[in-house]
Length: 474
Image: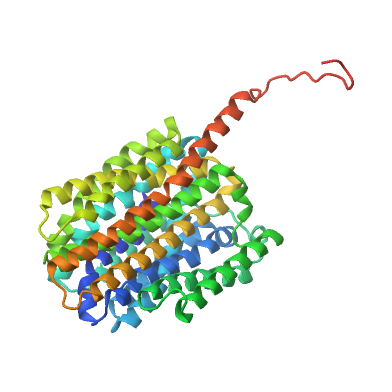
């Protein structure tokens, strides 16, 4: 529960900010394409710092690093609340993301080591508590804060939670046993290559809203980002202690679960910015009503999270994740058909089903990835899964925000019907991105099936195996 309390801050902050995007856009006189960097910058910062967690946990100890992450996140929240422009807010969100990027993977690392692979599905249900609470509580809380106290309090609200998490962590978490010698040197060159490459790719995708793919503003950062990422992979295969152990992807189950997590991150985090904007710009709802209208999806996620952990332990994470991906994609189709007067009952029903799909897909895929690893590999596997989820989320957010802004700009004089059409077109993109996750999820099912078959054919532990002498007849 100490780990969950700290994680609540990081996850809750994303959903609260999504509700505030319209207010921030009007307050700072910024377009959706510009203000989306408040979300994208935060996710990129998470992705940039998460690769360091494996090394940092060995170097400083998981407990000490968890305490530091809470302090950094809380301090970053204070700075965000004091921002005076879009640029300053994006910058402070990046700083806030440094702390947020450490909280979740370090917490998962602490719990995964304690639980072991056989209880990974149930452990994921525990870790999912912040994920369950955020879509339900976050939008409503954000709406109330915006309505009565102003947007700055969506960040200041983290201060009391951060203080409580810090006090409880100091009292409850056991002392660390790590040492300086066990960690080795930090791969600074690898960190520079990966962080710069990810930012360049995301920036290039975000610029597609105002420039063509063949223009320098898009092509140069995309090509540079791809080259830097490839250089990172080549380096990681050659050095003894790379920033991320890319050799883990030789395990088909882990590789498939990782790609599923990446695609789901793009689909889920990207689409999270669309519905609040739909309610506020097309339907004219205030922040509090928007928060309440977003609750059905959170309820669907909560129900699925409650059931998916045990289902993953019994059926395999791949099967549950594949079913979740297909349900999420199917439940996103109605959003691509909504107009400016669609019944809220219809919207709410679609959101519940979509939430069920999201809850069925996300954590079983991660549980399958952890179950495929040995305990010694968990410190390297944990940050990689989190990096892929956040990078996917940042890319998905940038793409969908740019698509939406581009269609709105082409309207000339925006009307409710015209803006609703822009949202419908953007949601078709979200459906396509979600379906991309089905391919690696299907491969994950096959990889798990092959692993179970090998386990069944292997001799039981402690069995005496007779070996025929060399040259003996079979």
